[in-house]
Image 1 (tube, rainbow, N blue to C red):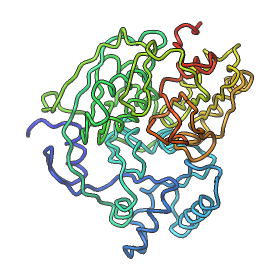
Image 2: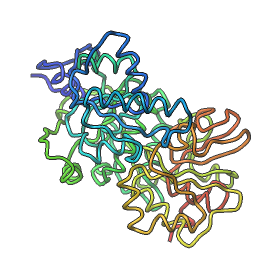
Image 3: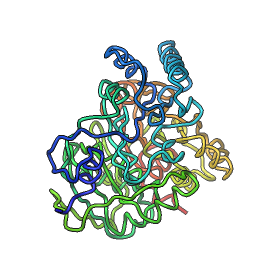
Length: 420
């Protein structure tokens, strides 16, 4: 049998085939289907096609994270619709507003495991690649079909293999690595590819850091991002799931469309500038740009290692006058650990506002919108016009270290100057 990539193997298995070739359309059986508030849209399509019941209630996960607590009457009505549906269909896995962001909660609760095929009605579903799953975002109508049949047509993607070598310098985080890559390849540079992150740098990363890379795979157009499972993966999943799993990796001689290697040993902090995520520059190029708001959180950078990094800058310092620093833990688990470690009190003493776990200001729905003419620096994943409020506002993207340093100085700052 010919050598196959990770993507080929997972999609062939899901289609009940011995093999699958890049470009081939397969009818794949879905292992897990996730929706957040937009489950209300899925439900509308589900009813329109005449479906009576979901195909497998144990393979559907629903939760609220984008607008929690409900910020409008419409949001509250949508929440109620989904809650009623959960009861009607007796769906066992439903996380209401208290639990956190879908892309943090699913890994924490052991739902995302190596070798799975996962779809979600959110573009950043690619995050679960950090656990060795092929995971991708789909639309509400597609999800209605999945709810009905448990199957979905998918094209087997070509593979880009990105190799990373070198130890990350002080002040540089996984966010800087992926911003550098996106700046290099462009926002459509990996369009519909499965991006494999490999090499010693990746091997040394935590699951949290790997989640940053896979989360933002979509920001260069990728269908999926993957970090191959290893002892770090097994250690993370230990105690989170007792469901057996079979790790999947690419065969050594499998053909890939492109291989690019990066040496990160001299990579410094990076900043994505308005209004496209691939407009990336070293922090030195934009240092001193005044800001009105700083945001630390999201499905990209709201995990405990991110909050610890932020606290290393904020401890004993005050947020600059005129700057609104908003911190959003990604989940209840993260929030509790941050509280136990004293990070919440550190943030509040510095002048930050700490929000409940959720998506918060990232999507421009509530909890920190920008007015015309305002400028924010954020650990989130998108900065197009209007993403966090007014189309006349500007959003810069950076690591938790860079955002925290900028909040202290009142302008975009190099965190290396403020680190202990």
